[in-house]
Length: 166
Image (cartoon, rainbow, N blue to C red; front, side, top):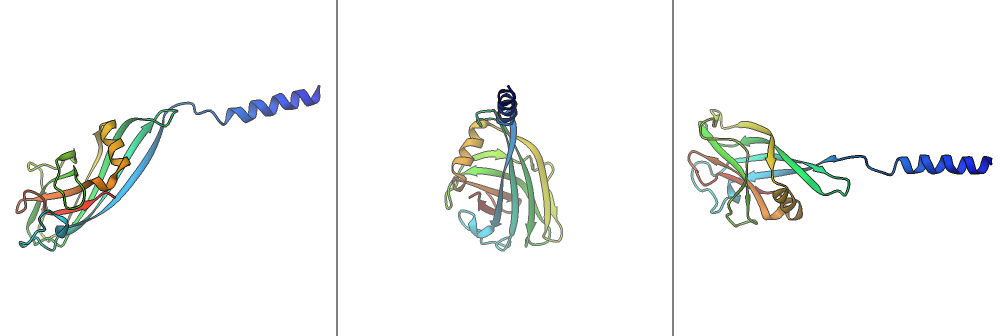
């Protein structure tokens, strides 16, 4: 009888920890080196030495089968080596491998109505909780090198600094 009771107790304890009870959240972080030389074509005007770093954090909600059911993204961007007085006005994740120009996939929220002024040639900005479609999150996870992040300035409206996610 004692062996049966012990076996039943071990079975109950053993099973209790193996079964997920609900959705989980995981994060995937991309640290992207940004450079004016990576733009297509490379920047050749006064902003040619511009650089930066973007930390892009995908927050993924997954169901018990690990399928992504929702996603948001946080952006934290540092801008450097711009000429004094430069202004950043847009920033996005685009589709496109290195050397390829692609369309906007995810907008950060930076707008010309609220640009980032860089009186000393440096600046920072951050946006959190930007909604991402499950389809776009899955696409980025499957091939981060097929996507790039760039920042647009007043002088370089098509993009001034760029870097691939993977």
